[in-house]
Length: 272
Length: 204
Image (cartoon, rainbow over all chains, first blue to last red; front, side, top):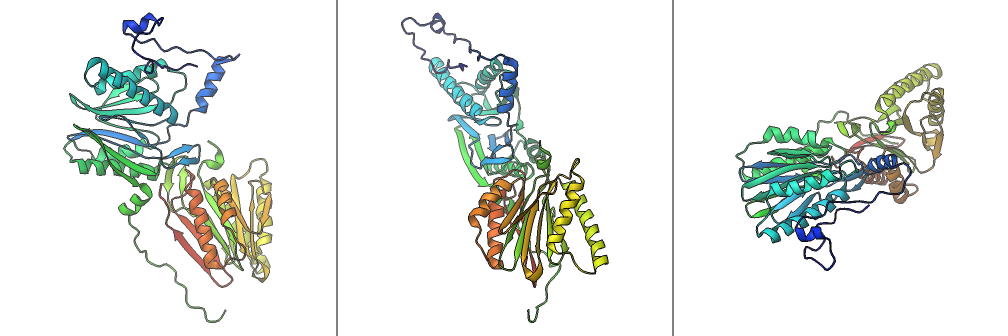
């Protein structure tokens, strides 16, 4: 199956190339079908194979000073933890971030592809692409692969001329604009903390602490989230990584161990 | 999701010099969600016999209640405690009674037998006994536990060293499993005393 590589083809016309490139429109994504007797069954199997049910917690919200983006770092295969140090916040370009939920390969590839398309847009139009435009590019690509088994639940967060922007884009081709999002199996727990503590007028430190707490609480309750809580801030000058705390240590920072009362104490035994 | 992975659990028992240790994690979950972080999986049958039950929590509770009932009857009739080997046979028989509608549990039995010789064994859900001289494991993290125990185990460890080994093996293994963890609970039993300790672990 050939993937959409229009972002990687050279824009300059080459001898004997297709007319479509010269026109300025990129070729529509095309793919070859595999040689199987039962294509529907094969598709179903392929989808089930890459469907590790978005075991993760990611969140992002807009506030007065910009956008706060946070995520955990656990990768799970069924019940097995395959890694505790996965980078789930992807740097698309110096002023835009994408979060990863779903298939790691899918998210990494398509975010990088988006980064390429954004750069090409910059070069062709002599100005940065807006968050609206970038999220639309990604949503359209994912829509064209609808039903093929991609697993992507991402948030595009950035700062453009109109200010902070946040969009949620998923593998069904859905695209939502909003102020607060959380994606992944740990998202209900993160929403609980996030919705309770959210105010538009927060300082950067307060917002970072809210994001960190929300991720921590999600890792506590959700088995598929854990590892390190990373927090990034996107402001007028681009994104900046604020912290990466191990949630094992965060637990004992928020809930330190108190000496408990002794229930049963043993007396000294004389002789054996 | 599989029925054995519905609640999540990790259990390990290890033999030392005239002593044994039995340890479990403390999480009770429902698939990926955590419900409790202080769930008791190991129960005392009598001062020198401990039973740990991994697998489906409701079956573990019911099975435990049935076994305590049978042991109490035995104590009334025989006027003494059950030996660990006898108890293991009892558990095996009770599990096989339900051969075609089993309890979804994997028990780990650890006790001090005659002459204070430590005895450990585990079983599958229909009562197939597996006696071991060194260690037994059960639960969703069992594969990691096998690896950890195999590399850390030494013969004839004293109680303090045994505690260290069991704790490290347990914590290392549950850190690689989404469905178990959230602390540990270790019992180290010698002929004269039982030491119960709670382990501070990763709470994610």
